[in-house]
Image (tube, rainbow, N blue to C red):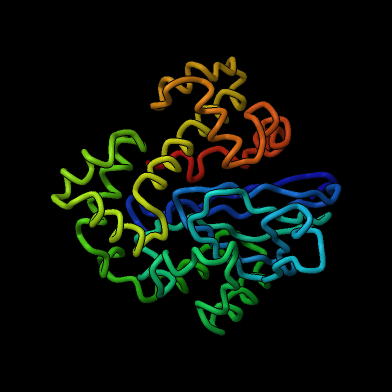
Length: 290
């Protein structure tokens, strides 16, 4: 790779499977910076191949002595950005995992990952995760890396990656995804034949979020993907149209969600992420999945 370059390599996970997207990344010769890891309706799993990843709930924490540092990152469903220190060069594999497949893939429900911004992977996955990380670090071929990592994470996943999840919660998530975060809690509760309170309690116990919080994340994910596509294709950035098409009351509500989930306005976030978008870092990944 030449200095100042970014590389993104994508695998093709099985549609409807536990892994929603898998991206290999490598950068070289870049100016050290902070990256915003945005909230998502999926769990984040990162295997770093180039030293520990430093993260924090604020820029100050991520760049300070009390930053969380780990070679394997597990991130639960959260409601604000995580700040990630980006060194001059880095490489790794980042997965987006369906939260209802967390039991099968990670061995714990997604709710157990919500207490911390980042959970060291070895604390959950055990020492075998470090050995797999070392093995894929030694490989120079992205396909081999994806194969090794998938084989390890999927070793205990049977024919049903959502086994152990209550059917009402699984159906609630499916309904929310089908409606792209639109609809009402009353309509959702009626669909799964539970009271709103009971559904919320079961949903939160499994995912760590309420159905309303998950719905907002899904809606924002699709709206953000539309904004990214407009930039990647050179189309006009019509935020009012995007807001209307994705279930927002108006433009200001989309801006509100951008500020909550990114800490910036849509324009500010796009300015910060423009080079990653142009390099393909936001295209055809988890944003393209329902």
